[in-house]
Image (cartoon, one colour):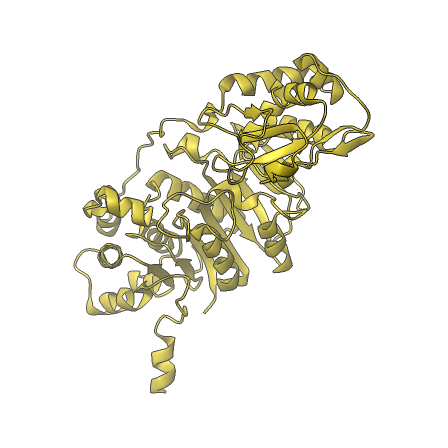
Length: 432
């Protein structure tokens, strides 16, 4: 089965072992990345995907271009919008979080970041964690230095063959400070990066400069920096000397405004994603169904102890963010909710944060019945208690048997990555 709209906030956890942390960047070791590939398989050619994930899914690692951006384009879709400010507005967590929209419309990518908006071309290689016109200009200067050569940084070098240079024992600490070593003591560390050079002092000055700190900060994907991204940076082909930040700024021909901007970001010391969650009042209508769906204790009141949260990474989407995302869907396609036949899916539906608001808008915009709105609304959820709560929430107060049958069929308890997405169709085929 394919769907017109997919709105989802998938689990961010690592797929290997019992780790609850996301793996570096957006690789398949992260559950949310596996979900993101699944969305492309489930969406109609004319459909729209709107998701919340870490921005690491749009990074580049061992390829010249972001793998997921390539996959989207190769499947006939395009990323239309990405909002990198969701931490600032709605979440109070350490890792960066973004929302993004994908459809078959080949438009420029509208990027919202640190309070400003800009447009990127579809052929962009990757999207930095913070992104505006000034940042893109500086990145381009560092990656496209005239008569420059790329850095040759190696991962996990054998200490016995290291002739001397610099190693990065930990590229980023909690406050985005680079830890650089000029001996072999950290070469054996997993993931350690190093560069061989006989100009140790010059290279140390280079990597400790404000400009390189700035580069590390804006490429912060869940606390990790990647060798292939660093190797995009170019340095002068011939001998160069560095004694101060000004030497580095001059090397890359930064203008006065760009220099001040670099200093500003570095002075923030990586705190751009540490915001208190905004308080936005809900506009609740007097409609009984709306009250039933919205006036619920956050996360449904289900007991979620520390162990469960670590195992499932349940962080439900705040209602104001859900409503903002639905608003943007309507801007992109005014018929999103006026056509009651359009199908919607959330395959990490939790207790129904997205699905309940979708049903409300379908009824408000199209005038359809609750039964009609529910019949084209689908959810898959791994936690059984969430499924039961979601069904009760969508069914509304005093539900009819028809409504109960619809939500029983359309809200499924299953692993979203292995489910067949037929939602009862196989039973109909068997009977007829």
